[in-house]
Image (cartoon, rainbow, N blue to C red; front, side):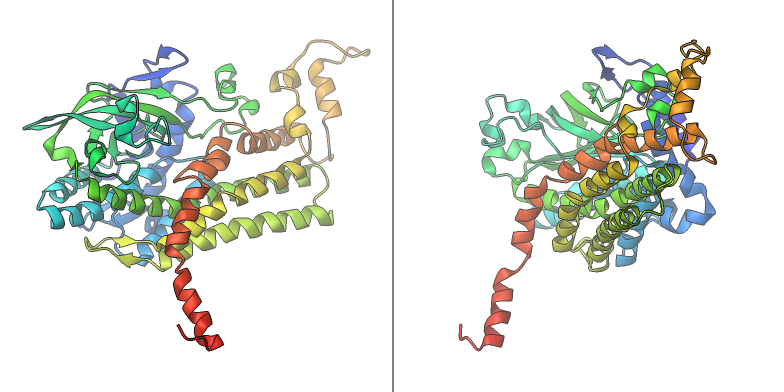
Length: 492
């Protein structure tokens, strides 16, 4: 099968019998729902750019499994150059959508599961790697979207999975059959889950023997019997219900989404099982996935950051303040922070190395440094953007008020005429253009896109403390002490 177009991808979703719940109701036509559709458009962009010869080098790759041309989002990294192209591709898509495009998690899961199952089979004599390779060949050939799912609800964070009062708060195996397993539980905060054809499940933490039933990895189609999703709310999401095309939406073409994915006794055939109780390898899979996904943030958040910086610069220009020295300095600082994030994404890619399975792993220390910076810098970039934009970003009347013909002024001026009069700026700037850029900034800083640019930057791929733990492990303090001893002339 050839690479799909964005439109073909959207049509492929219509053929799924995915169960989606939102606002207390089941959504029958979720593909065209005004709250969900912008997130689907973002994923469609990953297909459309792969069709564009200008971006073919970034968006496509040659499969190491079949030799065919595939979408890079389904690729197993074969070199440090592949890792670098991944980051550049993610930045490009952030620039094109100004939102989360949702396929990074699946790509990072592919690479983590591929190398982990290889080493698991080597140690245990199992056939999980063979299962996974066949699955990934199918995904590559059919050009499908896969949700990489790791995060469990977790319940009481002070208790291990097996010690939870409710055993389902971590996804687990509840039955083993000759032809497969039955799983129960949920995965939370799942980016792009509703827009995916399949889900690739991984354990969420390192496991001990008592948690063996929770050490499970498998693949499952979105419309499997017993699987359903509850759509997550986002700030300002119902503006899309008022009028999906309104300026007030901020970014009415693109968006992201998250969901709670529930596995209500779902049967998984053996051919789609990649770990089933081998608790010793749960930590390896988690660590490798986390490393890849922390690298990803050095691309996608940078691309969205480019849009934030551009919108802030436009707002300053429309306000007539672009020549002020403090505005120039703030834009320089925003650019400095954004490019620092990109540097870390490129650095951990350039310092990558092959795994035993043959695909390439990033430098884990630098990937964790990358994500640690991502937990901070976007917040400062947003703070500066809000500073530049001014208070009108959050106090501006609605588009309906700007369009209102209701008389209000002494001279018979309409509400719309009053709004356009008092929110005018430079003579060469259309009032509606100013509206548009301020609403875009609101969307990125405080609205639906802030889920992906702000809070996801904090907690996605692990919260800040998770990176600090890995930096501590990977930082080689003992080796640095030895360097100091040698120069100071201190005997060990």
